[in-house]
Length: 330
Image (cartoon, rainbow, N blue to C red; front, side):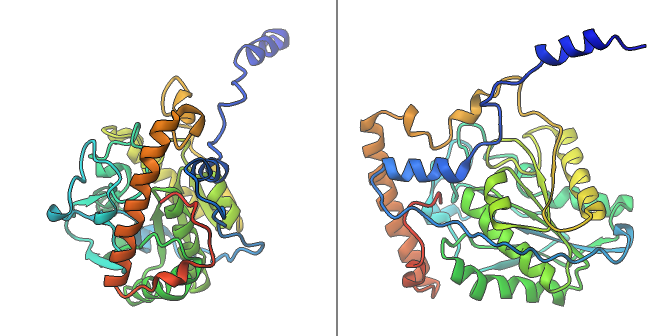
């Protein structure tokens, strides 16, 4: 028989610190870009209503599509591997598709992940294509859709919704996808994948979004969300930890199967580490000296110029971002 006094004492002793909570990325990024000197805080997408498409067949008999915001490695575009700084030159602004039957070298140097804590090397943390193929071979899912899809992280809600998302949805429908797994990386990636998930659901394709920015996803509103309380860039599991990655993907599929309705969020029981100190590192102006903020402002201006040139060369009109502020984590 359990001693109630002992149980209460154990609960008190195990209370977590107040700051051991999901990182508030919306507030953090607003504060960060304000400290860099940008005005007009970015307006993250927000909806009151959330679409929901039920899963109409067992996953063991379903065709599953995988969507990512990671970018194909471009050897001529500068550092994109271990220790790579933010690299705007490696961005892409047009949705791409790739053969899901083979491996691909995708990177996340082009987006604002947590570089102190993201691997930048183990793509199993952000692109679980090989693991999904293994799940198909084991019968956990019926099959992978013929193509996996890359979705650009454009700051403009309008461009994402009116240009990029319809392309991705059409391709998933062409491939006969019965369900989709979406993996997000940076803050804007989480918004992009949330908008994409909503559109897929309206098209009748059930989705589950895997991510680490809980506030951004729930602010937008998605049908199903697996939240891992990990640093940005690790939505599919801890680096160099196959067991973590397998458990994370399995839990995402269970959320896809069992969500009772829209706005279903399930938090992974996995912990990043024994310490929660990492949560104070990302885009924190209180931990950044003024001279470092000045240097980072100059880097940010240069990255914006690079991104503008890339958008224009891709046929994306830069004026389409005028409906949002400058202060958005890339």
